[in-house]
Image 1 (cartoon, rainbow, N blue to C red):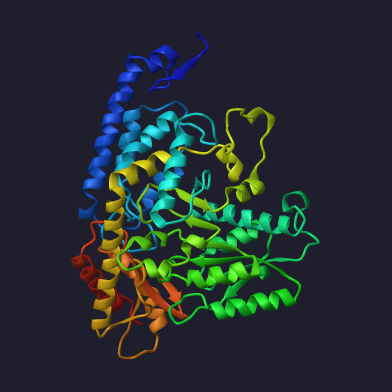
Image 2: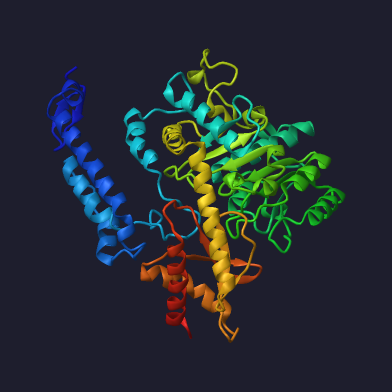
Amino acid sequence: MDELCASGPNGDSLSVAEANGDGSYGDDLRAAGAKAAAIMVEHLAGVGDRPVWQPVPGEERDWLNGQDMPETGRALDELLEDARTHVLPHPMGNGHPRFFGWVNSPPNPAGVLVEPLAAALNPSCAGGDHAGPHLERGVVRWLAELVGFPHPPGGGLLTSGASMATVICLAAARQRAALADGWDAREEGLSGRPPMVLYVTEEGHSCLHKAAHLLGLGTRHVRTVPVDGAYRMDVRALRSMIAEDLEAGLRPFCVAGSAGTVNSGAVDPLGEIADVAAEHGLWFHVDGAYGALGVLAGGAAPHYAGLDRADSLALDPHKWLGVPVGCGCALLRDPAAARAAFSLVPSYLIDDNAGDLGWFAEYGPEQTRPFRALKTWATLSHLGRSGVARLVNHTTGLARTLAAMVEEAADFELLAPVTTSITAFRYRQESRDGLDALNRAIPGAVQARGNAFLTGTRLGGREALRACFLHPDTTERDLAVLLDEIRLAAKTVQP
């Protein structure tokens, strides 16, 4: 046993018994753990009193990215002090109630608390008979039940985010289409076969395009379907494009609808898209990474009609739910489709006790998989179904309230209907010259002031402002602050 040792807090050699027992290393770890918890609480409790975001000063950037790796190990207490001094003061801003940028939520405290416990176990959740895989089965079922998606046993897995979930779902779609045509895409590749075509709206998320690239479909075979005046997929145009591609000898295989786009929160006409997919034997995928949970808002269910008919659904628990990053989820109506696309079990991983479902590693590209289920379980358990619904209703209500404020103000205009918790709008002035340049410059000026955080986008060919609401502590007063900050920022960037 003498050769089995661990490194102590100062680089000294400790025996395994000392490192894991009640010796000095155990005491140091206990004290450091308590200090880490205190720093975490101090940080979270004071978020609202600090600027939402500020640029990282040059000297701090130098410290963060210019350090030399220490020759000898450093004490845990020193590391915590460095984290307190140099890391925590420079957040992205998404923990603040006036952070309205992108789709980045504050961390749910229950998810934060259990993260160290998952790290303490440090398992691979590829499979096996331990807590990680079993808990993952449960939380995947919870997520499916929340949004009303059919969930057969094994019909989903947690991923690093919706981008990876999308790769999994589209790979399953590609393999199913190939097998239906009498060949195996895994075995033969795509060369020499009719090009497979994916249909995505112009408001579809970039992860759909990235997944298509990774899967060898080619940019020219990702067809961009126009949208209507509410930025929803134009189903008539979809039908026409499929007919054109069939006539040209191409192989339509999948149509991807959105249950909440990131630009405006629009929800595509999912039921109509499901009809088209069924008529042509296409895989119907829904990108619900951000917006699928919007189905829980009062009166929202009709917008989501048809979601339960999808072959696959991508979700991001680390968005609206606030599960600490990164945690996505791929849900599948037929789990065998993903298994057909990914299963590869080397001899050293054969598990005779795995049962009919096998290992999670058979349903996606990851082999060593982190324990994502613990923080997801903790977050969902902490909120409960009623808490999730309350959060969704609160944030969608804020988006509608801001839309009403925008429509009442002479210096703003609303650009899209509010369906989820995103409000897309625009600053305007008497002279309409230069409005695109002005609205493009406003978000950066707002961010730099530190009182709110706003991002921009392009919507309908125009530069737009967008506010996304995910924080449970955001108030209507914060909305007034946001509009005032935009007005002040506009003055500073006027030509």
